[in-house]
Length: 257
Ligand SMILES: Nc1ncnc2c1ncn2[C@@H]1O[C@H](COP(=O)(O)OP(=O)(O)O)[C@@H](O)[C@H]1O
Ligand SMILES: [Mg+2]
View 1 (spheres, rainbow, N blue to C red):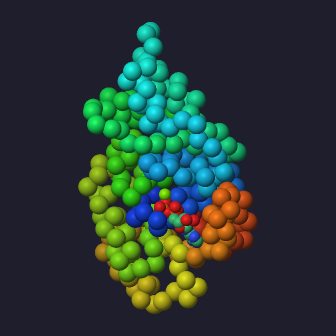
View 2 (view 1 turned 90 degrees about the vertical axis):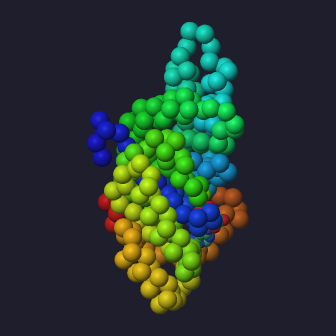
View 3 (view 1 turned 180 degrees about the vertical axis):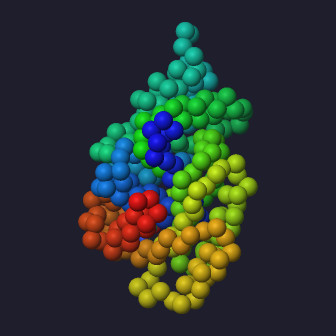
């Protein structure tokens, strides 16, 4: 990481429900507990829920600020200044990391300027952090909307199925057509059963051979994650010995140091 060039960007990709937000929460836990801070997490899913997995409450989203910029920028203030001021106020501060929520995508009409200002403000903001994590929804639109051109690590999360792994491979290929330079792509197969069938291993090997994906590892279907979800408690409180946490941390250590 290089402070003059801003944060290293880590992004999540994968079909809905595969575990992107869960992995983002575990990654925040890893970075914070390893002292690899400060971290800015951006919830770029329209149905924002990363905050719930972190035990945080959201007051205002970037989408709301962007909408208000159009009509509410006071005289004597540039739209840039308006956005910067409100985005700084929207930052949710936690221990070792901050969180920003993108919220709903824009409605009809032209938001080109608003989005370009948003990207500028975010780029400036990112200079204050060591890592910028982007929890995406299934699509990758936000990566271009935020004008993220250089991604350090893209985690592609898959469910433990033949078609899931195939989809992950397709997503890895799709990112080539975006104007982003991705340094490494890491496949994580989530919610695997205790006995990993050889067929799944073979599908993974196939996907890795056919794409530029690196195999990160398997994360077990976790009773502990399930219980935290049910109790609506923060994943940050999970003990490091929890098998899913241990596996995730191993993957992070290998690819992020
Ligand atoms: N390894 C796991 N073990 C148990 N439950 C999991 C695991 N990973 C994800 N989940 C659960 O699966 C659901 C979808 O996960 P989520 O991270 O929200 O997926 P995504 O962000 O990709 O849509 C959530 O209810 C989450 O608690
Ligand atoms: Mg999600």
